[in-house]
Structures are given as C-alpha cells and as structure tokens.
Length: 492
Image (tube, rainbow, N blue to C red; front, side):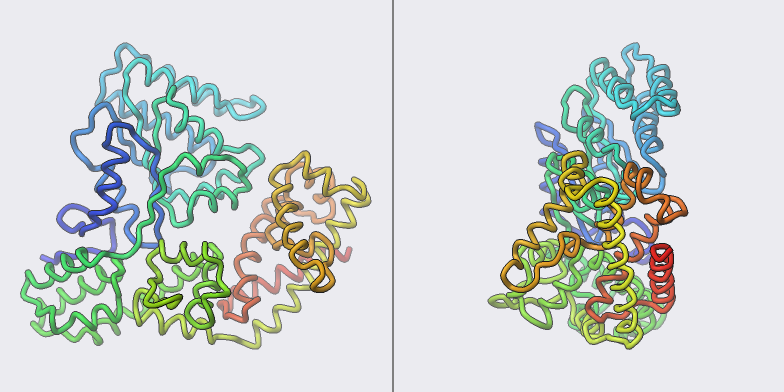
C-alpha cells in the first residue's frame, strides 16, 4: 500500500501534521465562542484537505451543524444563497430535531423569493429562514465554503452580496458562522468584485504555508516505514520539493512505487518523469502570484533588491510559505528547483512581447481618451467628482489615482487623473451598469459581458508584458486581437 496520495483531497492516516494551525482551528471553531475563520493558501497547499479533515469531518459536534459547500456547486448569487438554505434544510431534516419547525415551508419561501422579479435581492427571506432555524433549534449552522475565490466572479454586481453574507455570519441573531478556504485573501477577492463591504473584517485569517520541520519528519518516517533509506535521498527530495506538501506527496508516491517495483531509488530520474506535471503546477502558481500582484515583487526580492519591494508584499509571500528569510533582508524560495524555474521566468523576454506593448499602449490610450471625452461632454467637467459621490466603488479608483498623481507632482509631468489608472479600472468605469446603459454601450457595442471578459484577460496579460516576461503563444494572439478590437471600436 502506498502511504501517499496526491490526486485527491488528503485525509485519514494520509493527512500529515499541521499541528499549529489545527490548534488555532480548535480554539476558533471548537472553543467556547465560534469564530468566522478564513484559511488562505497557495494552489495545492492543502487548505481544502485541512478544512475538510479537521473541521467538516470532525466527530462529536455539539449544537453545530457543519455543512460543506464546494466551489463547483453554484453559478450565481441566487444559486449560492439558495444552496445555503437547501443544505441547511436538508441537514436539519435528516440529522437534527426540528422542534416543530416547518423547515420545508420556510425554505420554499426563500426559493420562491429568489425566483421572483422583485426589484433588489430578497435578503429578508434568507435572514428570516436562518433566524427561525436558530431560534427554534438553537443549532449553529457552520458553512465551510471551499475555494471562495470564485465569489469575485459570481458576486461582481452593483448589489453587494458580500454585505448579505456578512450580515448572516456577523449578526448573532441568525446563528450562522463561516469557514472559508481561498487562494487570495478575502479583501483581494472583494476588491476584484468591486465590493466595499467590511465582510473581510469579520474573519480570523490563518495563512497555510509549507510543512514544518515536524511535518517533514512525519513525511520521511512514512517512507522509512516501508524500508526506504531516507538518509540517502533526503537532500535530493528537499532540492526538488522543499517543504511543499503537494510536491512532496507527488514525489513520495512515485518513490514508493519505484521502491516497491525495483527496491532501488534514483530521485533525479523519478523527478524527471514527473517534471511536466511539476511545471504545470509551477505555471498555475505563478499565475496566482501574478493575479495577486506578487510575481514581480517575488522576482525583485530574489534577483534585484528587497529594498524596492513593499513590506506588505514580503509579508504576503512569507505567509504563503513561498519565501523565507535566510539573512538580513535576504530571502530564498522554498526549493532550489523552483528557484531555477524562476530564474528562467526572470530572464525570459521575447521580441513578440516587446512588439505587443506598443499595441497595448495605443488601446489603453484610446480607452482613457474615450472615457474622458464622453464623460466630460455628456456629464460635465466635474464628472469625476459626480461619479465619486454616487458610486463608491468608482470613488475608490479615483482616490487611488489621485494618490499616485500626488506622489509624482514635482518630479515630472503628472498627467491626467486617468493616466494613473489600471486597465481593469478603465473597464470598471465603462462596464458600470448605469454608465454602460447611459454612455458607453452605444460606443462599444456588443454586450457588457463581452467587455468584462476582455477586461479580465487584458489585465491578466498586461503585467508580464510590462516587465518583458513571456506569455503563451495563444495568449499573445488573443491579446493582440483584443487590442485591435478596442482600437477599431473607438475609431468609429
């Protein structure tokens, strides 16, 4: 039997260590007062396994109903909140006394309200449901929302659904508590959705990083238990994997298979056979870092100077477990193999990428000019102030632009306010529903979702291009096509 598994959630005897964060979980979830908890970690670091094994799968809950909500189970806000109600109703009906509670009738009211054409979101029916459940049963409903990053897409709306979820989890009247797992921190998820809610503030946030020294000793003891001479392979395993749980699981599984087949182990040869899978993972990890605006700081820390990197970015990278301090302002990544991969990332620069940058700058200028001209003409010269008063999510963009502009006054031509905006900011202005309907829809054509898709893709590719880092061939072609589409629309 192989003591490792890496293609599925890890549980039971195969779950390794994590004693420190488990103690925190026990205090937060199983202590005298239940706390909302967010477990944040990079791809395949083990957040889902930890939440499932140590929270959802825990035995002997008292007056708490744990409910697992997987990422793939909802597609829009109505689906999401209906699912919360349905899961709670199903669990109560099957495993908890209802004390005369007409659970199906209450749930039916919620479903009907969510389907109705009533203007606005029928949050009152959802609140009433959970309030009645809690008052009549005294059971706390503990929702474990796995991979909560998806909320940035489904909650992207002028209706701030994060506020509705905050009300449920923060107001003790409803008897609801949340455990979230995600890759990005909750505030970043909200920012990407355009939310100004204080939702992120109700959580105890716990980062999940690499294995501890104790966890590593448990890992190697599993190899020793089947006869592997771990002293002979220890350095090689750490060279490739460091203390990364997923990579250690993957390599460990193949080491065991090779040992059981041949009684001999060549770690370098084994790793060569899984190199493609590892690089797929590295690519997904760097995409996450790029999305979190941490890839460039990571490369600067490793290959330029820590002094030019914001301290908050250093802290975030440390919390992911991707870097560790090895001297005064001197950092190393979690494994030498990943370090070598990042060297190539840092050095990669293609002529194609350099050619794309001018194309993007033209499209970006066209967007800024169109917004400025349209709003100045149709709203007035003080359009920024007017939007700032009526639309808080846009005010946040303008305030950040003003701050950047102020920093550069006296250094050189400070430019217009929108010169300090990000591409995603420009699309947030254009795709704001009221502004789209009144001003921009007739200019851009298509539908609003068409341009939201382009926003996400262009914003994703812009950062690596700005730093002359390579993007994939098909992405380059799409990027160029989108830029030309923008120019074509705005020349009409």
